[in-house]
Image (cartoon, rainbow over all chains, first blue to last red; front, side):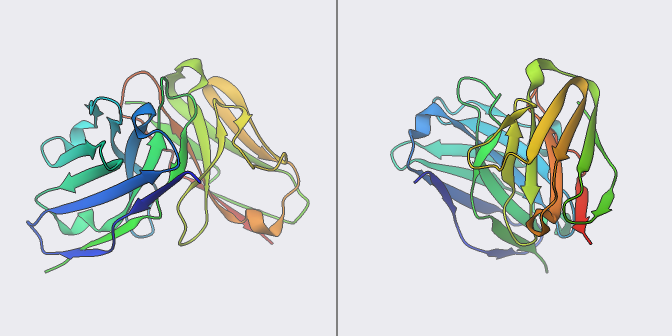
Length: 121
Length: 109
């Protein structure tokens, strides 16, 4: 079946970096992109960026520019999101989601289980 | 950036009642690139509606979406106890950022 499986819980100190992985299975990885979405405790959903599974092209909001790097490894159908210079307000659950094939009409239709990242000294 | 504003913040209704959730965009969302998601505590979001009005695979027909331009609606025609959740709208218009609304909480009495 189509699924996205994310890496496990992370605890980091302020100023450190975290890299979350998202392994896809059950579909052609290069036919879709992956969006990254985070949710701080008790808060709503925040879109962090998108990467094409076809050519690695990225789109991301200005808020995260310079701190976020999204990459893919097509040989293992895995997407990665690295967040640097972590702060306490980066504490959140981070999700990957399948998003955008040749267009973005179909929404984020498959989600990973989420990766909890806690930033604490 | 397109800002999505959802209302009401909380909806408290009884089983069998109709729920109407609103999502208003600060600019027109082109081609209806508007989706709705359901999220229950401790779970990942689940896609309900895409393209403003098309149900995702496996979604019961009591869920329906409508609207265009700047005004969109999610309707749950006959509430079931399992519909208690947060509901988010999200737009994937031409140019990022692709934003979410702040959410509507649906409570079943």
